[in-house]
Length: 105
Image 1 (tube, rainbow, N blue to C red):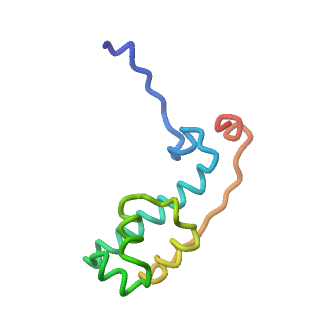
Image 2: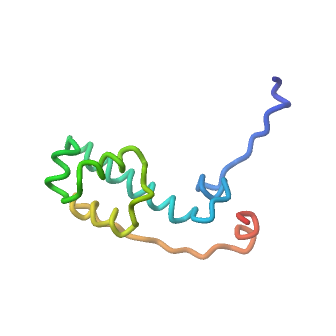
């Protein structure tokens, strides 16, 4: 394999969009929320069992979040977990330009 055989493509910041996933924005938001949950648990040095008592979700669910198995979670449920960890979530909505819309399609 030579350097000429490799095509480098710059992503747009959302891997799910790059992979043409129809739920790209939702999956990215869930991943970002899960990353914040993991960081909050790590900062507090909480195990999943300790987190279960503090947050009110099962240890199995916290393990799923740690393993990025987010299919069972809604965005609002992930936000509630963050709220239980004393984190506030804000959402920013922005308009997509027409050139970005056609590039994502």
